[in-house]
Length: 358
Image (tube, rainbow, N blue to C red; front, side, top):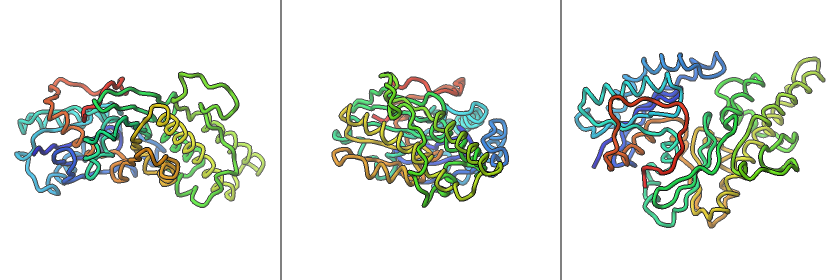
């Protein structure tokens, strides 16, 4: 048995968790900074870093207390090393380094993107990792910073089929909410506003799908681009405002947001399932903050063929959390893949050729 403490600080959530043997979540404590960043309409990296400094110790104490363990019970410390906001990442990484020194524990650096994929296998999903019929596996990680498709084979070898070329899906939702004056964070607000709206009223573009009648370059078949749909929303907003004395009609808001959200969801589901069929995928995993979106989850449930297993990350593990970091870190621990105290954070997603949990 191994107990791993996870630390997460890649963006605006300060989190700590204790996970046993990579799947049994004993505790998961998260301190949100939404209220701090809402007044700015988005995350301010320096402000996020200062908030992490304040929240890390209380969150750690909460995680240990909920798990009913002490530092001496912990076998290793796993911390998000990247990608993310460097000021925020550095706070968490240095905090974890201090714990590793003070508690005399090995330190594990975890890739935040891979941890999001692993979130789908926490708790009751862990047994799927050991089943041969789980692979090949296709993971869609969709969040504020990432929209990527990763193909994973049974031996852990992986390759990225596509990624975002500009805005990630979560960023596109956040910016749409800001443009329309709905507030922050955009994802949940967009979903609530769209509820009951007519998704077919406005035909927003589906970039890089060939839907506009233009030939799609082969290299972009599984890439994503949401800047075009965001620009289309801006023009729509301006046209409707100009036609109504400079004010966007309130009665158009629900249908506008529903149609915009539909365009984003359609692209995500269409590209994922096209890739799943082309590569003979046995399992599709959907994770990341945007995977909390109810209509997106419903669309995947309705559209995924019965021959393909669909694994949606549990809602509580979709947004940034430390349980996915600790769970993923367990597999590094088993292979004695530790980092030294001189290790640094990284902002961008590196090329992924394997995942550690296989």
